[in-house]
Image 1 (cartoon, rainbow, N blue to C red):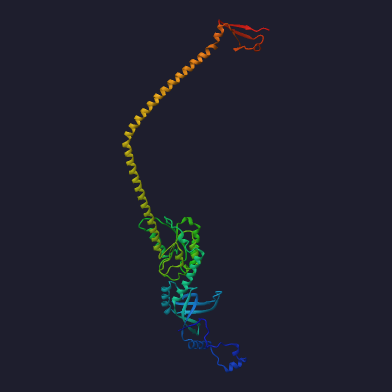
Image 2: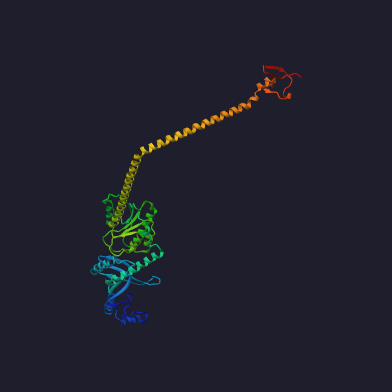
Length: 440
């Protein structure tokens, strides 16, 4: 089996051009056989069967893919590497008898259904039907080629995230100790979402989690836009949540490419809350899993992770509480023993203090008594001295010697100018007082 471009022209078919036609149409009619369209198409079919009897391995990108009554109908394209502009197109079909086997093997190997945008390596054979025209019949699809292309795309996304410095940003976030307010991104009717909620509600520890669903499409081409929209809504009320969980239930694992996109990975990597993924597949981790804070395989595993985390916190708090209780008990015992020892020493200390205090008070009393005695003695001596000094100044002694004292309004008259005619003055002698009126 050879490999060639899916869009090559068979070598043995010479195209009809205007140069091959006679200028005289009537001559052509009279000398050439007239064919019906069926006969002409039948000739094309015979020519293709003769000139291209083999199958060919062809590289192409799927632009459309749909299943109808068990058959698969695909539109294939080849793009220019520089501009990504399609340079060739073709239709391909895979009949149900082969498609069911090919599909099962492809999904088992890649974890995805063949979908638009996916590059594939197909084994095809040429087919021309008189009524339906030309198409390529798919005999097989090699999943290893697609896996390689998927791996190259994933690696390119990872390298871009690392170049931006955001690849490890989620893992730098700390999962809150009490991660109990959970924003869930999932399909509303998915069994996995129900399993997740039931697992949280029925946990053996009796923890009470609060969940809020942000519905999103979790399969197909709309995964990226839908999940990003849900993240934006959560971000608008980020203070209401501790953690975000992105889950996708079990069942068919086809078409998970939506979780391997640069735009979605950037949104998750830059999100301010820790994100846990439980995409529900057993193949290699998606890019979304790689950039998330933590990833598990299934929704129930995501619930178990949150329960176990809270159980570890509860256990830590129990141990801390026990340590605090032990420390308090030890301190109480220590203080009780210390108080007991002090109580035993108090009578002796009190007796010693009492004796010392009494001696100290007696000493102070003796000192105070001596100080007061000396003070009063000194003051009495000073009074005696003052008395001796003031005796010669006694006015009575002056009066006894014949002197008098004249006053006006109680004031001693020292100068004649201090009185005027008509003023009443008092002259005091040793034997009495004399009142007089001043005349001119």
